[in-house]
Amino acid sequence: MNLSGYGYDLTQYAADILPSGTFEMTLVASANLAPDVGISDVIASLRHIVKLDTLTGKSAIAADMDGSGDIGISDVISQLRQIVKLESSSGFKAVVETSDGYTDQLNADLLEQPLTWVAMGDVDSSYTLDIV
Ligand SMILES: [Ca+2]
Image (cartoon, rainbow, N blue to C red; front, side, top):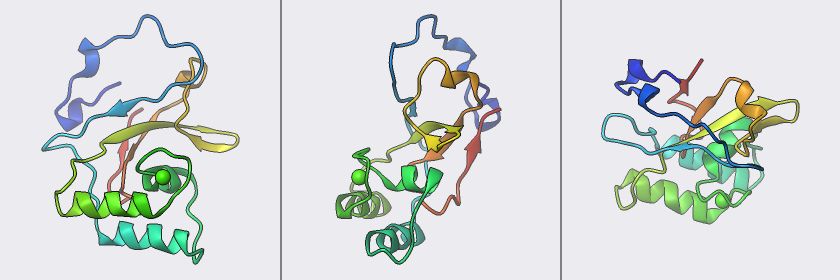
């Protein structure tokens, strides 16, 4: 991973033994690297909840703030609390594209694929951070 363009040097980190089964990889937000959650993201989540739109892929993962597997009012409340700084950022979550779409449930085999970082709460993908 090379995040040097974003002011991060991850070369000091290494994983010799990966967890067995599935796991998630997250990146904690910081002052200069945090998802840009806005009202447009809240609206996108609400439109999904009332079935005016269907969020899929990275947008659906970004909208599921609590990682419950679905997008509900509690996720919207979390987005709103982050906008008004009542709640700290949810940071970023690594995803891999599979034949079934994007997943945040990683395993050793999936790590052979390129990772994409989803900015949690940024449903409209106004903030993207790709790692090649
Ligand atoms: Ca949720």
